[in-house]
Length: 466
Image (tube, rainbow, N blue to C red; front, side):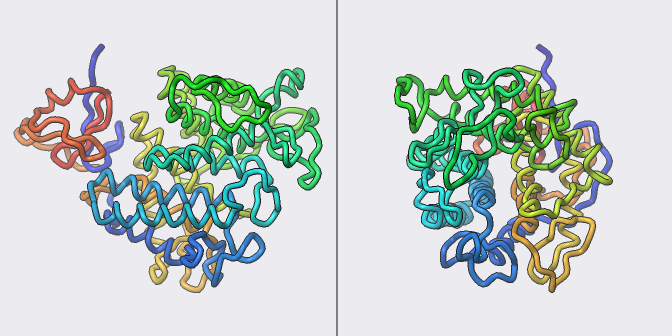
């Protein structure tokens, strides 16, 4: 098989070689995240406030950000530690590991000690996708930190959504084909109704993208984490499953959601009893991208990567104006940009689709130059300057630091640099993995091309071996 070696200076995008000047640095990216926490993190409780002018985050009715959005903010803390680890920055590693631990403890304390059978509507769990966002976040935290409780809670929450709760009395999110027929079978229901006294789901109840694709993401992540050789559970309400089961269900739910809710990269919001309901949302595009990337990495099947690329292309060509990401201003919808950052990162770095980096840089640059420089936050409308006296949601403010954490600029001040001169390119240099591990002490470009597929760093340039 022919091997290809692509050189990236800082953040070169394959096929896009024009220079893109940027004004922010690595230090600015860290500062953007610290400013977000300074404004929105309630350090008495280590949960997040909903608005910049809130003194405290008391509960759902008293200043706390939405329960599912807290999971996205926890993801950001985990991402900060992961980046510090990759950069071998011991000081920041200690700082953000402690922050992630404090946020985990604060969130657990706030939300019923992660008792997913407690469905009180203030600090409890009463919508399936709210729970599944936390399933994903806790699984990713376990993947990085290895704390057994994180995996246990992730699996418990997944099973709580899938099977329902004996205590609550709901029948779970899974639209089991053994119970439902034809167009009413398959996929995941969004919530149980009514919350206080739930009844079994009926044909035509809402099956939304926002529960289906996060379910696939969670199942794939758990497949990657749980050990082989587990015995399949036999109880009606298991709290964990086998590795094989997670992948089987990931593929099943993905196949239903892809065939029912997706058309040429565009993701519908959901379906009731009729056809798919087409309304574009950035987080639906994002989770479809993430689900596709994870299945591609597990199976190696090219169709999943093609699906992820079509979904990303749809965002930038049909949902953006001049490639600037859209801001939705409904309840909690400002957080969609942060979710998109999480899963576009998978497509770019885990799947080698670096051509999207130019668009990412354009958005970060626009947001950075239009932030409120006094508080250091942005309202995520990257085309408009955030005013110093503006009341800003934590949801909208999360977009810029989420992008900056996940897409480091490197030391260069341009997104594309000229190719190195011939004699410089021929110089032998050490080669490192993205997480900072030495791969080869000395290598020529021709040597690097023989390495396993992946992204490497040499001479302060990124190289993609395909």
